[in-house]
Image 1 (cartoon, rainbow, N blue to C red):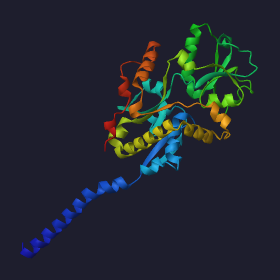
Image 2 (image 1 turned 30 degrees about the horizontal axis):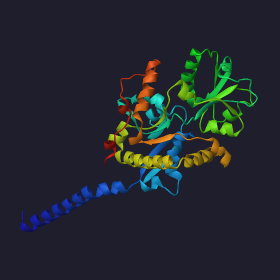
Image 3 (image 1 turned 135 degrees about the vertical axis):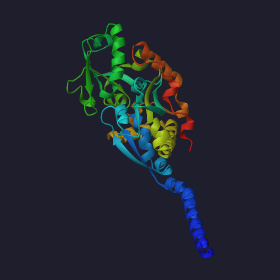
Length: 331
């Protein structure tokens, strides 16, 4: 090979090396610049408010800051099953169902945030009409008790304890969101069990409470209500950058709502197209929003132990194992 040909080959190799180096150095930066597309399962409860705040609050713009293209998908049916079926990348699911079934086909659902019903701030109640013949809990015997479909597991836990007190033959009447506020007028129920914001909405409509703090009285003092979950493989292998971004955005929203609970009420009113009336928001109470480091593992353990005592679930999983750890979200 001539000297001229050798120089040309060397120049080509140098050029290819420079291109390869630019690719190695530049591609990660290019990838970082692209938005992360994330599917988020949402409903109309307090549990989904952090997602709405992160997407729609123009004063905060948490999704914009984290470069997220969020697709909000209405949850149809069981949100936990929706996560397992891959319909959503992140969603809030009942802690109850997460404790019973956190695994799927070798993968695991873990929480990066939590919503809790705290003792001392009653967010749930059994509601009755003003002229009801039901005056005390024992009067529920033989009556029809309505509840929102997604809260059936809570009603089952409550009724099993009521039966021990002699309150029996209660007929369960599941209701949709389009039914609960007219269920009394339509003669579908004699009483309704509701958790805020729906408890507050019926009180605003003039109905009365037979008993509030039902969860605290019949289940546990403070109940982990909803866990914000992602799949472990999604975080660790499939789309780590997207997972880090959504976790950061949701944590920021959780912190903001915790400091400004009236924000959650405003979004609930907007989501349901309820009247923008201060009298309504005064009737509504908000749960405790907890970021990953703030999740009350002691209350998770108490709830888990209570379920096991009732023959539900297992204590084979430590409370901390339901959670991601902060190092899972290090770039």
